[in-house]
Length: 280
Length: 332
Image (cartoon, rainbow over all chains, first blue to last red; front, side, top):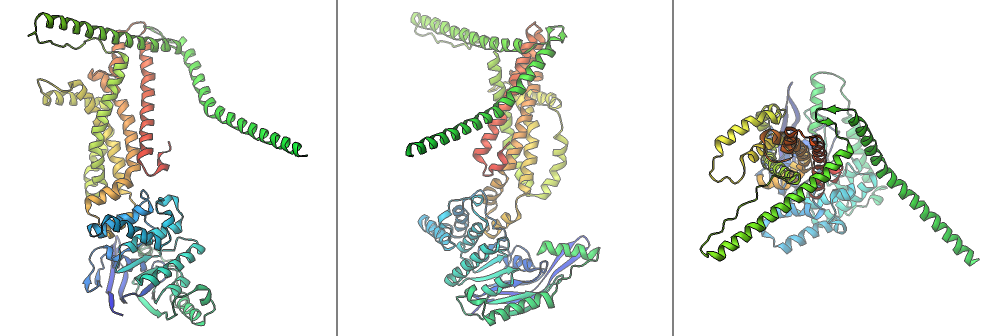
């Protein structure tokens, strides 16, 4: 597999009234084409900051992101983002939300009919073709997130960035969404970076799990390769010893090696950690 | 057995429908009865109080005197229209006669110059307020969007807005009058100066709530939606058109409704002072006239002003319901 995305030694510092706060320290990660990578870590560890830098929404203080041999300097549709709270435009229907993206990305290169077919194809992919003319306030949280994914997929991104895409959903809906995502992944074989808090989700979906240390100055702690055969089924995996070993690896990292201790100190540090929460 | 079951079922449906009727009557009583009761009590209080207020123009008008005047005002309007029609008929006839005598005669049509009736005044006021309001909206919405998008511009403009916002229309009016007479010089004016005076005064007063609310709406757009726009690389104009404007629509309408009610209040005051035809001038003229009917005619005007103000607000709300995607913000 060829190298697609190179997150090269990035540092991130946020200016605060009490001096600059270092959120990331030398985060270095290489991602190949078609790979599904999860970023996991406690809240405030800067996972979202990494994602936002890859998306181009933030600029790294040091280092940079190289996609297909070109440095990333601004946001763009080749790095489509699925936001945690769907971020659909509430005044547009599901179809129109995807349409806005498709028209902007493909413009005149697709005819009117091709555009329509492409929008419908992507909504079908996420099983939203039955409600594509409903507006976001008329559909459930899981459905909104499906539309958000359809919108991102419709941009045909080189890399799909997902910021805790299922974090706001209930457990059952989340499981459904994970299955859907695996289905889509099997079909399209996208390159994906996903942020998650959920250990099971990370092991189930990923090819690699990147575990981040706690902030401030967070960095890549350990990387775990997940070599479970695909397609994966959550039921079969429940008794799979390899699955359970990987799962406990992640748990051990999170709750033994990087146990989150809430700081009780006041002054500079608490202000800094608050900033980190915002950044994450 | 079978028939008794049918009877029972009938009895049950009857009972159900009578329950439904009872609920409906209850609902109507609650929604119509209580407001009517309020209005009735108010009329009683008004009539009682009016009895005991003596002015130099006679007793303060009670509800019955005012309702008489409503009818009288309407009749005057009808009479005036008839007079105007007759005037035009006479003129036409005269012109036709002269044309018959002398084919080279160029007929001149002269406008009717009777006095404006109460209904004419209402109409004029509505024209003035809507022109002033529209002008304000044309300036305020783009300005509000620009201020909402740029923190720097906001910092620069905000003090000016905060200072001009509380200024009363009466303070603006003399300035506006002088500026209009200095700048608006035309041998054949399209609109009267007095109309411009009150219109511009209305604009100056109702521009601020719209600017402020629009800018707050724009500045408060969900960060994620802005990020969506950035990821899509929407050009600036498209960003405003597709993201900013729809997102700010509920707040823009809030500002517009505030502005329109300010505009209506300001207009009456401006018309009184600017002597622009309209409801304000009607009130002022009646006050100057000082007949025994004046007070009840003014009171009729007061009620009309209030009622029109209420209707304007409802109209705006209805417009918001049509235009805005956020139905929850268009409830009251």
